[in-house]
Length: 215
Ligand code: ADP
Ligand code: MG
Ligand code: MG
Image (tube, rainbow, N blue to C red; front, side, top):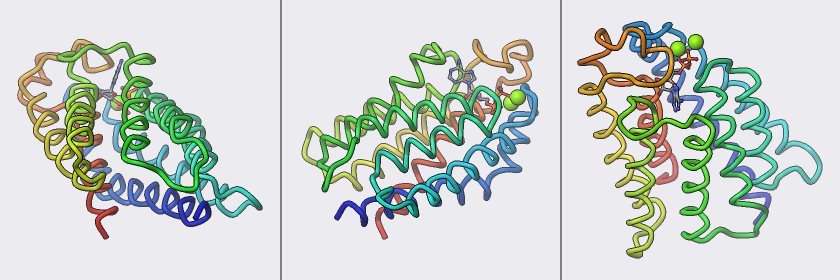
């Protein structure tokens, strides 16, 4: 069971890589409106390294634990991505991995704990508040919707899909905000009317994970 879960972790990271690659150019263009235009390439570099590290860890003798695979993925993501979002994604991956730990099976509560740890790691490291126009504006509504669905007894995959829709709407709604954190802040007026790149990439990723786990 542990080996199968490890392979699921590897394929989940590969699914994240695929959706980032599909949207790499669009994410870069979005970041170029008021930022420095590197959100696509930065996410791509980070997730390419994360997917390779996950696969490599799964291939090690005894390396198939979910926690080991996701920790290696997070470390590689932080190291290779560069940029604010890479440090945040890498750190959040490592926090989610620690919350999951090594088990033969995972409960709905484990999934909720991992999402909570991911979200806390982002806000602890980045210190962005809701409304600052960052990925936090997509992550907190995602977390809240996911935890609410899980605690009302909804299956993990359905909870993920419901929360992904909430996250997509929240990411789109950042268009109305002025950025208060990150590189986009000096060009805040240009950013009005366009969503935050990091919020959009987060919502694309959780949406894809919902589709991925459904199969
Ligand atoms: P950089 O800003 O270093 O060029 P990216 O372009 O890859 O890095 O990422 C930009 C995204 O990072 C923003 O769209 C925003 O969502 C996110 N971001 C920036 N600063 C913070 C922060 N302090 N907390 C959370 N997210 C942040
Ligand atoms: Mg950037
Ligand atoms: Mg940059």
